Amino acid sequence: MKPFKKIVDSYASISQQIAELEAQKKALRKEILEVRGDKKLLTGNDYSVTISETTRNTLDRKALEKEHGAEFVNGYLKQSNVVTLKVI
Image 1 (tube, one colour):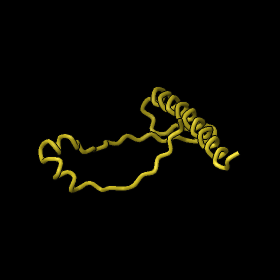
Image 2 (cartoon, one colour):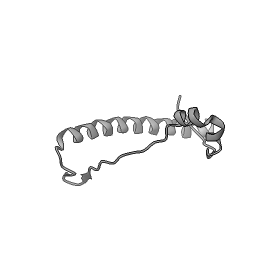
Image 3 (cartoon, helix red, strand yellow):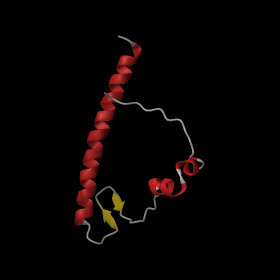
């Protein structure tokens, strides 16, 4: 067996487990938000969850480019290299 086969299979398996756990986490988050009322702290037997609300500001890049041009916006972009592994 080639040395990377076990590593690839382990990576894919863990990725699948994470996806399943993320789906469970998302469902539990929804349930918590539905039952919390106005509470900001919910306590279980072993853990507590704090709930906070904030406002997020985002930049409308399309509108900025439309108003000032893509060249203007590109002057403020920060570039970084990214390595992505995709399980297929």
